[in-house]
Amino acid sequence: MARTDVLVPADWAEANLGTPGIVFVEVDEDTAAYDTGHLEGAVKLDWRLDLQDPVRRDFVDRTQFEALLSAKGIANDDTVVLYGGNNNWFAAYAFWYLKLYGHQDVRLIDGGRKKWELDGRPLSAEPVVRPTTTYVAQDQDLSLRAFRDEVVASIGQKNLVDVRSPEEFAGTILGPAHLPQEHAQRGGHVPSAINIPWSRAANDDGTFRSDEELAALYGAAGLDTSRPTIAYCRIGERSSHSWFVLSQLLGQEDVKNYDGSWVEYGSLVGVPVER
Amino acid sequence: MSCAAPDQSGPSLAAPGATVVEGAVLRAGAPVAGAYVRLHDASGEFTAEVVSGPEGTFRFYAAPGRWEVRVLAPGVTGGAPVTAEVGTTRVDVRLD
Image (cartoon, rainbow over all chains, first blue to last red; front, side):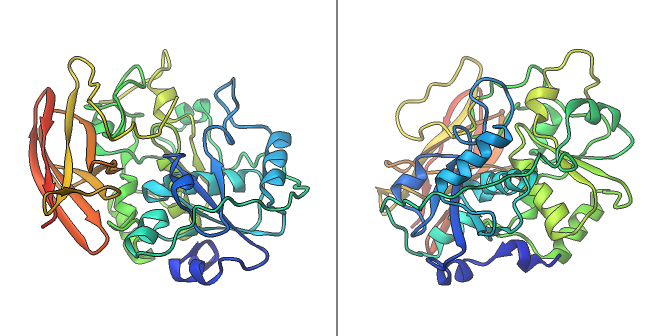
């Protein structure tokens, strides 16, 4: 897989706004950002309202996902180009999520909304309505998704990559520093996890570092490329960013995202925790 | 559960014992809304990023210690060091 198959520069995106068969989708942490201005023609996915089950802590099921993409006007053979704020955290999360449900051609805009804004590229506040489709999803590809029991069984066996900040890894703080500190019951990390903050994979403007820099980053941090890998963070969005780097940019085999992440693990009774 | 950054404007609602770093991004004395405000730790490691609010304001929930606030806006960058203590520590970043 080539980097250009999954990651497009902002220039390419701007040149392809309105191209039939390409659907731009904004996914933000701040779900109000889209309404203030978005790429012309882009639709919005709300990572919380659209992608999470409203009752259980889990994703919408296959039928709900099919209804969602159909309503957004996304067809199975469309190229879905994702972008968002916060260095593409939630766009990467949506990338992983679309792959989980089997969408073929998904790409990220390098640098996401931040690079787009810093470049001074145009945004539109016009409402976007696309004709509905009849989207057909696959069953979740669980080779991409790790659950807690697998994480516990992987201690000392697989690469466990904790992509949170060093302060979260050490248990000094419980969540990213822009959020109130009120999440998991305990601070710390999964024993044997290595700490490779997601942010080291990104430049200041939100673009991804080069493949050579990324390979050197994970190599120096002790990632064993002969072993399977599970990435986690707090709720699975920053680890989607690192999952994207490892599986899509670097082509590492058998990389899973543990979306339960520290909010789940740090609240489990009976599991080992390191600080 | 939410991961959305809290509203960056308005009064701070820090819980007792919390360590809050907050301030405003200013250019020629005027607030800069929509700037990317990043919190780095004492070693330079990135910790968090928010977008400044309508009055140029930002807020981080950190831990006591030395930090640096760095700001990116179209065509300009800036930064300011800050030593956070329990409670609210204020730091403004001037882009001129």
